[in-house]
Length: 374
Image (cartoon, rainbow, N blue to C red; front, side, top):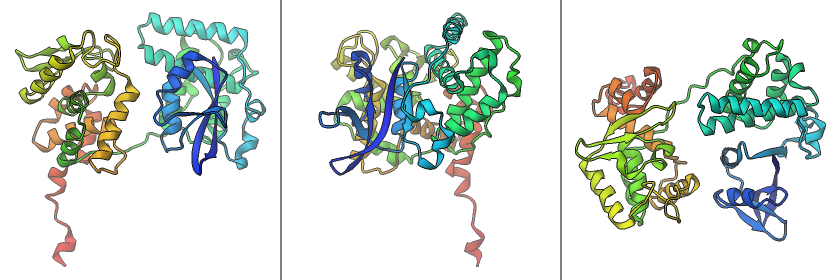
């Protein structure tokens, strides 16, 4: 697996995040999908804006494809906690035995029909952990190693709760089903759950964003996400036949958790989709890239939203998932039963859907502050 070394450097008076790796045409084509990425002949590396989400964007794009060396980003005060191999920018190596077991782990997940993204994520997470504990092998791993990994790798890099949880998921699965050792995976403790409210836009903000793109294709993509509460992957996986115009529903197939569901689709958005199909004539996917039959890129879709948000004059850091959150919240505010919203969103648990009750303005606006009676 290739290594990408990340550093922060100043370029033309701006703070940039630099990416350095040995030449690989495939990896270059993947990295070029990052927003704002450019090649510098002077620095001999790729560089991009050092935004708050930059590292997360890179990780999500290359996970399972390349190893990220964060050592150039760490603070000096924590350098003593970073393994010496990483201090010098060298990728820790896996033993030949662990490489064999990781390949077996990958084959086992494929056999169990885990999604391609889950297989890539879990394999990458496990590699991060086993490389950290190297030269220890799987046979020598103890629960204390995970504590060290969290304290010396995850926390210093500011990696998220989700990253930590996925490492534990991958480790538990690996040691429970592939490498049967004395290591008791039940002793692994998950991080304390974060309780964050979903980000929600007002109806006017949504309208401004959806009307901002000049390109019909871009307007239809963003409109569908909001009109049907779709996840990004659900939109990109749509095919023209997923629309049942006679029944007025949209079929969403094999989404998160390998579940199918249907959602109502209004005549208003159906007209927009029909207009788009007549003009663009998609062959395989409803939304295709520059080549016919090629799925539209996730990074390109993110750029479409960013451009629309800027054009609409909205300064909030809106993501595609905000449109899905806004769909659910606006449904709740209009009186739709929470159980129906759960079905429309494809949530397994009603507790996941109940989070929208905390951001719905319908009840909050009816509360009178005691300050008004002073």
